[in-house]
Image (cartoon, rainbow, N blue to C red; front, side, top):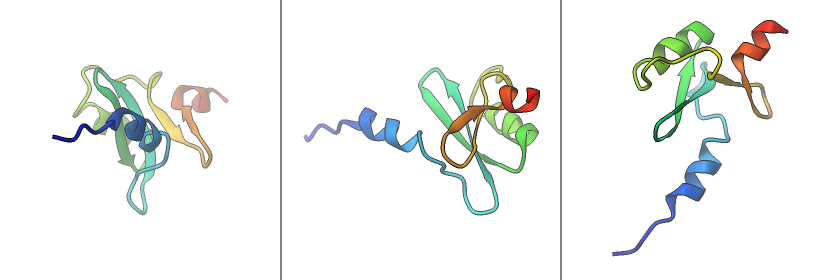
Length: 78
């Protein structure tokens, strides 16, 4: 059986926006890595994160800003 080195590819994929058309890309850390989320706004992304993460927080939620992921809490404060 051929061994696949998925960690390198997962790192590349989770560094890019993956949301479907019409949605914004978000990600939230979990025990197993990043949970990738497509949502309409920050509150929707937090609700979606709650489906996969125990106790999601706005402090850990990150949003794609066009070139990189940035913490939503930092964007709200600015």
